Each structure stands twice: as structure tokens, then as C-alpha cells.
Image (cartoon, rainbow, N blue to C red; front, side, top):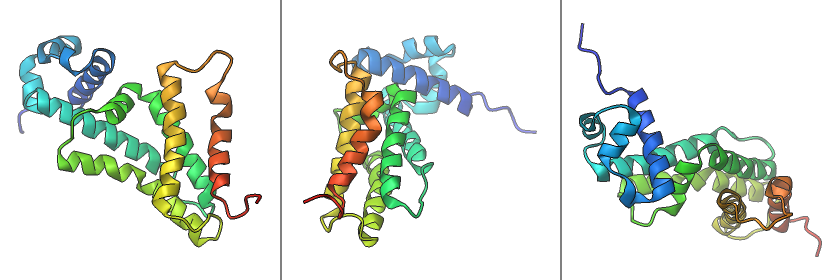
Length: 197
């Protein structure tokens, strides 16, 4: 029988969660491995063992944020209604951001370039949206325009509204939650082949 694993996935997840909160609330410079280890109830040896160093930890945070975001979007799946899929992807976008605000912040507020593999993983998160747009075009429901332009506009609406909501910078009396799905539908309708002329 082998030796038990001292630094398991549960500890890794706990460290990722604590580190994400520290970076989100206080910035990268405020994150120290000693502070993180203390907050997670472990040793700095465990942090070094799992992540190598602070740079490795930050890269792992970014990758985990991208992985979880991609997994959330993948739950939407593919239906025979590509336009509806676009809206559902926008709803999943908001759910991820609200459920994992620290990781969402790390994914979209990163200032330094990630390593190529991590950057590619983050870039892949738009694929389900691009695929839905292309399926909508093939079905004749969306205009013949570059699919990435349509996808980016839909992504931008979701990102902008979610970022305002998380930052708490919505003017008093306005309710993003109440109008979020309507905004997504309006954006998709703007690219529809059936829009009024």
C-alpha cells in the first residue's frame, strides 16, 4: 500500500479559493504564500509542493478560472435552437460570475500575459458562443456577417452588464438582473435575419 497523498485536490482547491479571494480583494502584490498557507490552515511547504512558487500559483489561479468558466458554459449544451443557445450561454456567463466572482475577476482583470497554454485555454471559452452563432447563420436565422463579430458583441453585452453588477456600479433604481436576459435577447435580435428594417 502506497503512502497517503499529503497534498490532495481538496487542499489545492482550498488554496485556489483563498488565493483568488486575496488577489480579487487586495491585488496580486498583497498575496504572500505564508499568508495563504495560514488562511488555508496548512504550511508554506504544501503551497510550494502544489504550485512551485507564487508565479506558479498565479498561473494555476488563471487556469482554474478558465477551466471552471469553460465547464460552466459547456453545461449549456447544443440544441436545435442556436439563437436560444446564445442567450443561454449569456445566462451561464452571468451565473459563473455570480457564483465565482473571485475567479471571474482573475480571468477578466489579468494584466500580465498568461503562459501560452493558459492563454489558449482561456481563449477557448468563446468557442461555444462562436459555434452557436455559426449554427444560427447556417440555419438562416442570423445575418451573414463575420461570426466572430457577432459573438464578440454578444460576449461584450454579457461582460459589460455582469461587470457593472459585480462592481456595484449600477445607478440607483436600475436592476441588471431584471433586464439581463432582455438585453441578451435584444442583442441577438439585432443580428437576426428577421429584424425590422
